[in-house]
Length: 396
Image (cartoon, rainbow, N blue to C red; front, side):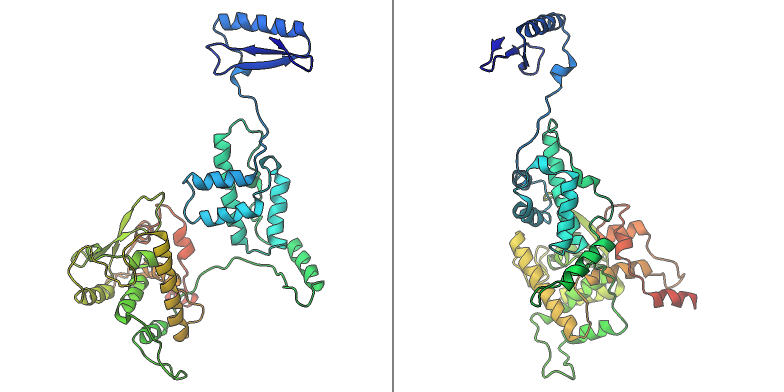
């Protein structure tokens, strides 16, 4: 026991039964001595009081910048989550962890809607990324006197309410002439399907056909490869990155299947899945591969070098997405994107019937496997955009 400069008495207890030295301060010396004697008796009997084993709760003073940076450097976040986390470092990095209360979380979400006018999906990404970082930090600091209030936000907190609409309307009324008007934003649901005739229009553009209202056809490099890439995604639903990274050995014409290396990988784990070939795609691939060297490791598409760096993949994906956008615009397929082809293929897998019996060809679990979704995933419901006219045709 020692007397502190403030006149109080600090008791320090060291014992092999304790995980670490125990300290407690008393106002009166007699209280410290009495507590110490009682504790000596308990420890001598092999009994450790519960409060000595329970770590003392602390109030963290670190800023969110520290939490977010440590979470990024841990290597645990998904690669798609890192850019959002880096944005959050600049946006909320100066906020202290103990200031992250429910009131702060609610106010922060409100500012993302009213001040920054983000779409609900953008807000959910920020909230989810920060929440995962806080969860990780709290698991490493179980003695911290804080929780994760982001998990207490009500369902739909990122969506604009009627009150939000009224606030934005008043702001629009008082806005200056050169000020950008903020409006209520909603999530964009992708349900764009190829309409009748659009497939032929797209293939005609890739083949070099000129529109009547244009002076020249669309100039495209590697037209043959681009045509096969389009039909490959349209008929399988493969992701763009999964398609253009295919090697000759991944395409098995005899088994009529494609060994696809998954574009969604967790912590570098390489996963493959087998995708069946439709009859029309089998003939396209057979003719195309006949023009290439018979090297199992050789790439079947010419747009990339084979280096699996994120920078190289992002560059090739961006270039091909832009190429498809040019093609769809020239073909007058307004609003169509390359990713919509994956939605289209999903619907076509669901709608595929046996020509003899009329029965559905695939079960939901089989389609999940073809598309690269986990068993029991709800992605099928998200991607299945059935046309009302097709449904009506079954009735009539």
